[in-house]
Length: 351
Image (tube, rainbow, N blue to C red; front, side, top):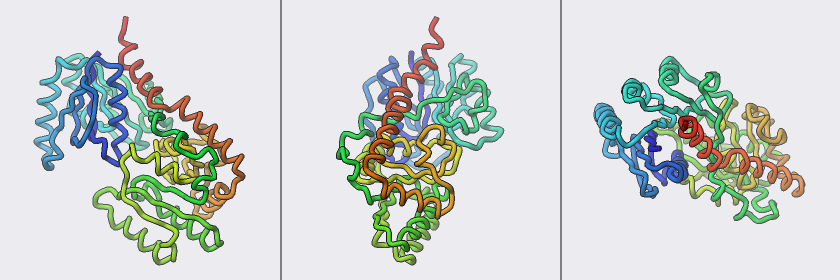
């Protein structure tokens, strides 16, 4: 089988989307040929049976040019692919759906967002199968939807580089992700302020960049930290490329993710695979991870849960973290994801 993948960006150096480079690498082991169309491309190192085509964002913004290039590519390459896998962006299915129907190409749609609209429904109608990781995703309610593993590359996200004694980095707290309101970094700074006033010893690292045009929110958090006298305990760093984050997880004992219920943020499982204790507010994951790692949405709740893990007995922490690591390996590894994608895209079509 030959596969066309359409995604937002192919770049091993992208802090947010760099993980998808690993997905394509793993899928290339299963397909005869993969063609990738992306809105923007950066540096990549993919197998010989993968060809990457860009719509041209890296050379300047021009929506008319993007659309023209898109149609030229899906038509010009039509003999090079049997099926289409659209990752996240429904716009590509809206643009290409009728053409793929005429060409008799199977269309597979990956979308994990909690919200959707009429255009999302139209994209779902065009798709033969829809994939998501969260049962709370907008697309999860459709009969054609298949729940999928998150796809954690356990060859790099693992315990091997962490000292077996999980006291390593015990007092170090980590927040890693976009510095946007949806991720609620301000909630964490409020919780840390509570801990600081109680005399609790800790150091916290915030790794991530704000989405363009939201920089004022990020700057306001930095100013609030300085105003609260937490500058010596809280450090801000730029976003880090995905394949370089394991060593950051290994240097911290507690990973905090305050994204609201409804999503399945892959960084949660990356941190878990690396042996971090978790503090999350996403109650939709209560069936997936240990209840001791889920907290309420108030600063006091978050502070109490962080305090618990900062002071948890080493044996308890090691036991809970090991169970969580095993869960990621057995249920959400990159191999598990690509095996299931291959089954849905290829094996269902075989006689």
